[in-house]
Length: 450
Image 1 (tube, rainbow, N blue to C red):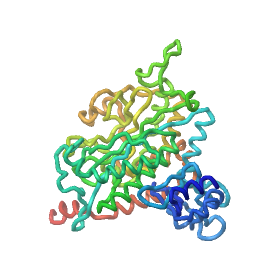
Image 2 (tube, one colour; image 1 turned 60 degrees about the vertical axis):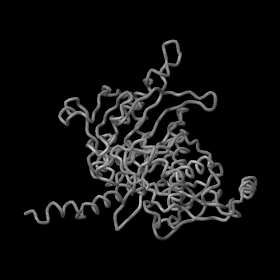
Image 3 (cartoon, one colour; image 1 turned 120 degrees about the vertical axis):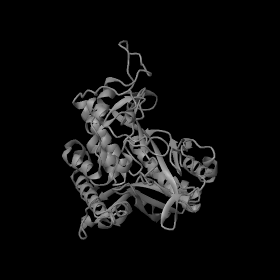
Image 4 (cartoon, rainbow, N blue to C red; image 1 turned 45 degrees about the vertical axis):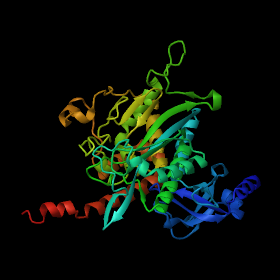
């Protein structure tokens, strides 16, 4: 602790940002003077438990206090917030790890892998919008960003170079390996890719990215948005996961999803190993329940529809299928890894990853077999053709996904009783609130119709 305190002080840090993540995947926390680093790493910073949505903690007694206990290994100086360093915290209640802390949920899931000598690595690819608000309407921040097919547009991309460059430098200064930045398939939409890491660290990186992007966009008069689908006629924002399962560490680490020949030689270009295919089979088997975690908002299901959009296609999966390098499938298989295309930008990375691990392990434990791969453009097929191939549909609304989650004992078990109960309660309330609204579309269509 003394070494860390001196290191941070020499970097000009005077304040710690004790940060945890709530059930919605939103960063929460408070400032702690550097002089109290020891307290943060031992007991933690204390919060009113019932003031944090999704904890279900009481208003009185020892269990009313939520302690965010920091980890020294996560300390990083924040370039966009001079004098401050973030420390990632887990939730603790009454001296015990808090069951309903999303990061604790993921750590429990990772423990199940560790018991087999395994660990999961993920590369998370966040898509996002840069927006502004004018006359009560949300619009792309760049008025000139209006191509019918704006993917990889090298006119709009340079106009946001100041924001993107600041974001790149900030993430690199925090230790993330920024691989690429591009304009995506909707107006005002971008994507940043950074290197893969162990599952918990990868989720921590995603939260750091969101904090940096929010602050930097605001400093330039824009709004950073990870709303899944802000514009009806354009694609939404995904949060694709590239997934691999590993054994060992360092130079001795080996990717268990890489297939091998009978003589033991690795075949890195031959798709997935039998273990990898079982993992994918589990992900497909539990896809309806995973939908509630990976697409957790009412708006999410405006994205998960195979429909035409301005740029030609939504790129979001609508069917429970897998295929070799098939971006129209829920799972896109690649050599030694797979891309899970279900999650959208609103997903809590800790809960989505925990659910993914539980599903994959169930596939391995039950030696499930993948259904036949789909190597056709699924978006080009009619619904009748989809059903003729025996391909199930994803849930079509949040309430359908919540019903699937409630029925799925494997996924609810990894979440734990308290978090699963809180999640279902909060999200059912969200669905009810949505159903009670009367939209402009309804008024335009029905007000004078009958």
